[in-house]
Each structure stands twice: as structure tokens, then as C-alpha cells.
Image 1: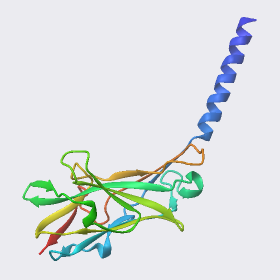
Image 2: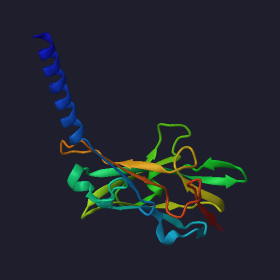
Image 3: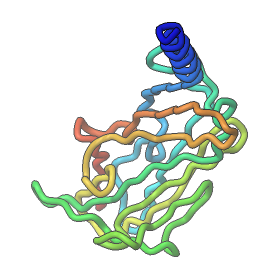
Image 4: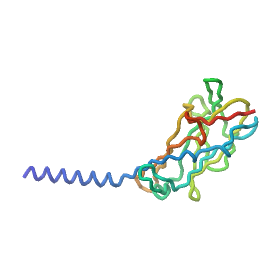
Length: 195
């Protein structure tokens, strides 16, 4: 009698485990064209604004299955995030620039200036809201001094980033977009010159 109970317990456990694994939906997307500077511009004048954009169409191609998925339909996520900073470059060293919220122009989405981590007001968090089939954010960042600069993942000053979509519809879909700023170098830095 005991061996039969053990077999039934194992079968039930395996059945539950299989159901759970079938319901897990993990998708990995790679798209290095969704975070960018207007016109891929790299030369500016002092006083210009650098227009930073996040533009993610909700239909993307999963790297694993190579099938199109609709992020919004699967998650009902209302936003996604991308953190970055603008650094002044001086040879091999670099320093993040400080910003105030009131000096940034926001046309779409949200751009938060993070003030609770040191150095304060150097990290920017772009919030791309969902609207009409696209997750979008557009903000103008003032270029107040001349020199060599670069945009990059904050606070490290290099690398790409995974953007996630938190389901709001009870789904357990996990969707990640691996990206970096379009036309950035191998370290994930987008270089600009301000004259």
C-alpha cells in the first residue's frame, strides 16, 4: 500500500510542476534601435538640447522562438524604464553631470532626476509610457558647457541594459529587452562633442 501512495504523490507533484512550467512565459528580445538621440546627432553647440528618446513598438521578435510577440497584450504593462547619465570625458576619466528637473524639457513620458543616490542629480531615469502601440519617452537635456561627453548606463558609465515589463493583468509573462543607446560604441557609450 505504501509504494502506491508514493507513486501517486510523485505523479501529482510532477503534474503540478509541468503545469507551472508550461504557464511560465519568458521572452528575451534584443533591439538596439529603441533608445536613441534625435537623428543620431553627435555634434552640438553649447546651449543646445540633446533630445533623448525611447521608442519601443509593442510588437517585438523573441530571440529564442524567433516569433513576434505583443508586449502590451501579454503584460498590460503601462511603462518601462531606462536609466542613464551624461558624463564629461577627460582622457581616461569621466564625471557624471548634475541636472535639475526644471531644466529638462519633457515632451512624452517621464524623465526623473534621481536625487537620493550620490552623487545626487546625476542619474536620469526615463519612463516610457504605453500609448497607441508604443512605449515612448522624449526629453531634451540641456548642454551647458563645451567639451567631450558621452551618454551611458548610469552610474557605471558603460554597458547595455535590460528593460523589463511588469505585468498588470495577472500574467506571469516575463519580457526583457536587451538594449543600449543606438550607435553607441562597444562599451555602450554614445559620444558627443559640444562646441
